[in-house]
Image (cartoon, rainbow, N blue to C red; front, top):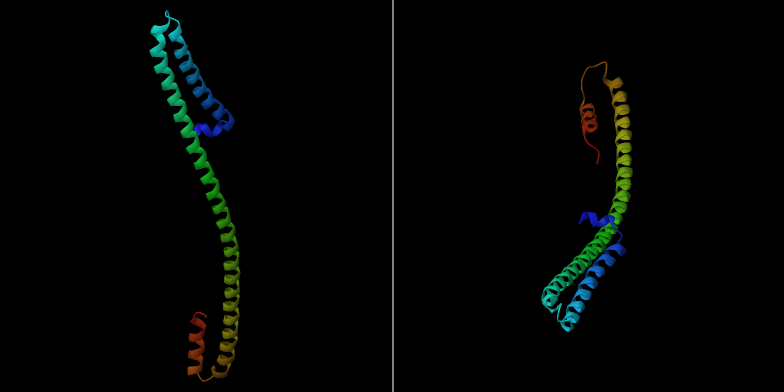
Length: 146
């Protein structure tokens, strides 16, 4: 069936209708052979072959119809996928923007905490006592921002 994708649809329809037409022509010939006694013995075999050809053509026509339905469904689903990809791209850009803003806030908070720590260290550097304010500032710098 994959090879049918390379054949234009018009040619496929033509081939299917040609098979059905050949079967119908053979069937009419089998009916006309009844009027010629010399060829009457071939009537039943030609009729059987023509019925088989007609049935094959109808089978191909049904398969062609199903193939066209699946192609239409595939086009619809591809359209839905394209819409979902566009929406995903928009959401990804929004997510990247939010992530960048959050990263910027983290960087600013770290700078503020770093400046605060350096300011507090200079006050208590001589005494070598670690005050609770310094411990709190250190813990705040290690804490994830909200």
